[in-house]
Length: 491
Image 1 (tube, rainbow, N blue to C red):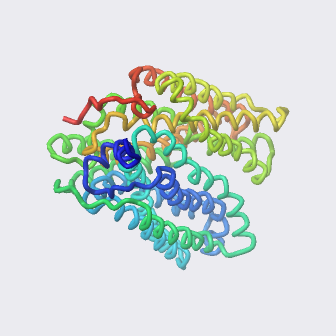
Image 2 (image 1 turned 120 degrees about the vertical axis):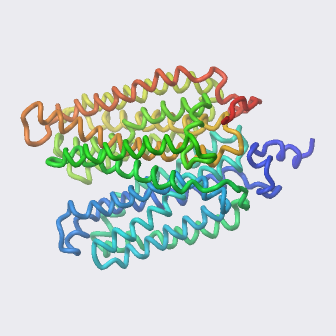
Image 3 (image 1 turned 30 degrees about the horizontal axis):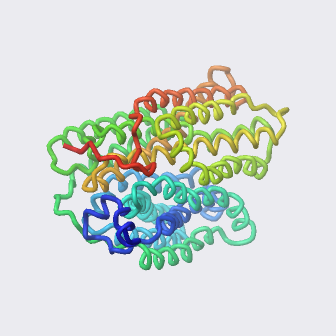
């Protein structure tokens, strides 16, 4: 068999079954790294911005807490537009939408840098959020459509590299920009990265033509956006003192909008979020198990730096250096995940490593100032390694039984819940910490309060083991380089 014939056989079903992609598909590492570079820009922007909020507040003449709306407005935009990303990609072509998302993000960045006041900054961040909402799921969709199934584990591992470097570089880079330049350069640095990304997408990402004649679910778009947005803000406000009533009201309205959406989706031929996908065993199990696991992943970046500063007396810079251990562990995982999954399979690997990663983060509850810093750092490296493996496995096996025609709906659905559960993890961590403080009658958190919070979030994530055990023993066989017929479809 010729090399060209072999390569054609390796093209994933979604690429092979459509005429959207050229015959020569770039190496999966090339595609993964281009997509990851866009995600790097987004991750870097968020982590750098967090360090500059006090300086921005001073320039705008307002209090630092008030500037936090610049962060939450971005999250709101994500919640509203991520569900529609798959439909938009089908309507206008995934490469066109991905490239347009980068353009939108860069334009939003320029407007943020030019914003003379907080109100215009919030508007610009909403525009940035629109770009980010399309970049994440559409980038994953491109990967799924143009990478052979047995290369998806390696491709997903490569996808994590720049996306993990962003949070690693963000805090020190933000400190340098705020100290030696103007905070507006935080947004200007996205311009060259975005321009390079636009060029690389045009050169290396296969073209994808619009291939959908389904009606756009406008009512579902509004209802899902209302539900997700209200739930997001309601959960966030739940840990703020004096805002409990407003939080409950927002969550109640969000649930009501969610129920209205579910009733609407039953009768729409192409709902914006298709819950029928949950009937597919590998996808539905991955969504549930991954959501439970992301509770810890969302809470950890919030709880750990606070504990190191308030409980250990570390400076912000010192705490930041220790927290980088999890990113180092995540990066080192890339070389091992494909081999582990190939040797032991998805189900066994996720059960065992899921338990290790959860207990590893639970061990953070035992951290005390007299522990050697080297030991704490080593434990966090291990936590990052094993947790990153879990998400590589979840993000891959979820699409094991997804048919090509359902891929765009699946990526937007999966990314929506991924984002929501990370945000919910922060809220649960904050609520557990606040509850522990109240029970002990304190006004500020002590080490024991952080211990309680870590045990609460890891206890929730531990229940993912039940769902990991429900994966089929043959789940992901084709992704391990073995042939496996796609069995399930959305009816």
